[in-house]
Amino acid sequence: MRLYNTLTRTKEEFKPMVEGHVKMYACGPTVYNYFHLGNARPFVTFDTLRRYLEYRGYDVEFCQNFTDIDDKMINRANEEGVTVKDIADRFIKEYYVDADGLNCKRPTYQPRATESIDAIIGLVQSLMDKGYAYVIEGDGVYYDVTKFKDYGKLSHYKLEDLVAGGGERKASYEGKKNPGDFAVWKFKKEGEPSWDSPWGEGRPGWHIECSAMIKKYLGDTIDIHGGGQDLIFPHHENEIAQSEAANGCPFANCWVHNAFVNVDGEKMSKSLGNFFTIRDIVKHFPYQVIRFFILSGHYRMPINFSDELLRSAQNGLDRIVTCANNLRFVIGKNSGDGSEDELLLSQIKTAGDEFIKVMDDDLNTADAITVIFNLVRDINTAVASGKVSDDALKAALDKLVELTGVLGIETEAEDDGIPSEIMELVEQRTAAKKNKDYAEADRIRDLITSKGYSVKDTPQGPQVEKL
Image (cartoon, rainbow, N blue to C red; front, side, top):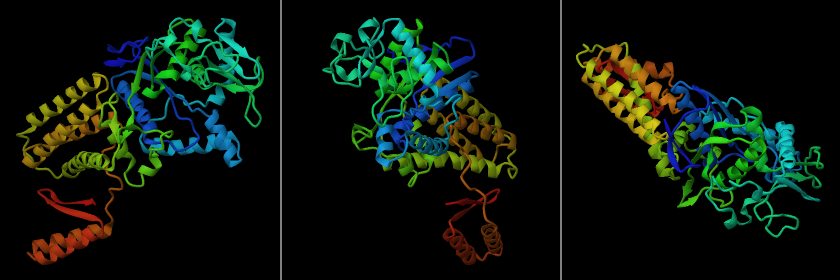
């Protein structure tokens, strides 16, 4: 498998440190609100990367954190008159509603930053001991970016060209040695949660949280670190600086970043006010459609959000689900002689090989979906021919479920149990057609449609689906 490594700006053959075992980390949400489509893209992307690595036989240790202490958390808690923990508890619960809806598998580890305070303090202490950090009285402990000779190697910025955007404070802040220096420990302010430390009561800086949780749960060096491209600088750049300075070894061997979700050509974000929460979108489109929409574009390419594109994704997903359910309906009622089995089995093998080929090429889910569409076309043709055996159709269904499953796409239609009332009407319609009472058959068909179901005549009998 080849992955595009942001660090080297090239596609590289992926080789984990330990054969057959992958250590992967992806930055998780700051839990002060429902997450939006821009947040969902990395969640789905790295869930899919994990699924594909497992499909290819790797044992994956996957860690994704919750940032449950920062300025946004504190501000929301103060606005509502509750504790920061109350806010975190509420939105972590809501996170799981949406993440489960998007069919994101639970990570191996999903720690809160506040559960790793000891690890954070230990990492800051190491930076202090090695001369990479210094104290600004009354403010906090800061990392000196000039002490790390490789600072800028991920973002490819030159240190001398960087401005104050690398830190949480203005360049003119008194006591800061360099404009890009950033806080690793912030001293307590009135009304803020705090923890004891060797430098005084306070709370962690944002960047140090991920470095500490990676060290605690995955070790000093990991195989893959992922996140949205907006995190390359300063967040991931600062993680590298902290971790490599403290641990004395490479931090992450491969850096994978997904591109933005755009609305009218601009990045979707809370700061721009053009974001749509997943909770808002599912009022109009199912979770599975949102996941399918995200995966329909290559993860390194921007995707544009619109109702039209989501409707297109829904149509594409429906096409796949309909094919799978048609197979489930036909198998067991099929009377094909098997004369076209060899062709379908060859097409199934080709689909499997092509799927791996495109996914091995930098997780190309867009082309993988094209492979699945081609398989759906071949399956539909085979079913229509009436010359394929049940065994071949079962193989086709198995492969379709297998490939969609790697993408986290479910092929079973939601709530496909047909009420007995509808089935009784279907039987009455069948009897009417047998008696050549076509007017009555049409009336019953219209009645079935009015109740939210469709009935289609097939060589294997009437097929009923929910509209």
